[in-house]
Amino acid sequence: MSFQIHALGSAQFAPLFCQSNDALSEAKALKMTVDTHPGYPCRVSLVDAKVGETVILVNYQHQPAKSPFQAAHAIYVRKHAEQAFPHPGTVPELFLKRLISVRAFNGRHLITNADVVDGACLYKAIPAMLNDSNVDYLHLHNAKLGCFLARVTRA
Image (cartoon, rainbow, N blue to C red; front, side, top):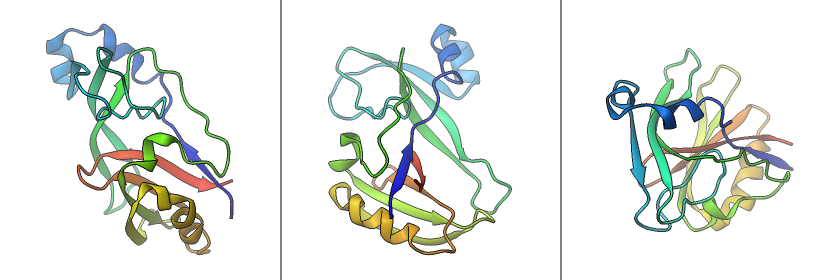
């Protein structure tokens, strides 16, 4: 079964880069300069930011549905990042070298299945979970830090 990994759009984050540190704090955000690579995975471009780049660390509601699983967590977004559109059935490099939590959700936005896999195993884990007709979509998270990485649907 083919799948599609979806990056976040950039428009909702672009205004953050013009805000003062006080305004960012009110928005549950922080402007940072990248000091290690990898380590700052951008949810818009789906690549790790390079040393010296500016990123915003912001609390993002990745599961906005009215469900017991409604959730938000910190994510990184690179300045001037362009939204990635990975080809169906492909996994961007950002995921391949990380331990990934895969969470399957049904149409009522309830978790029906979950697993933790080496990122290189996503090519098998994603189709296996989407093969279940009770699953509507998946969320990928950094298994160690818990951060949301991307949403996955059937292609």
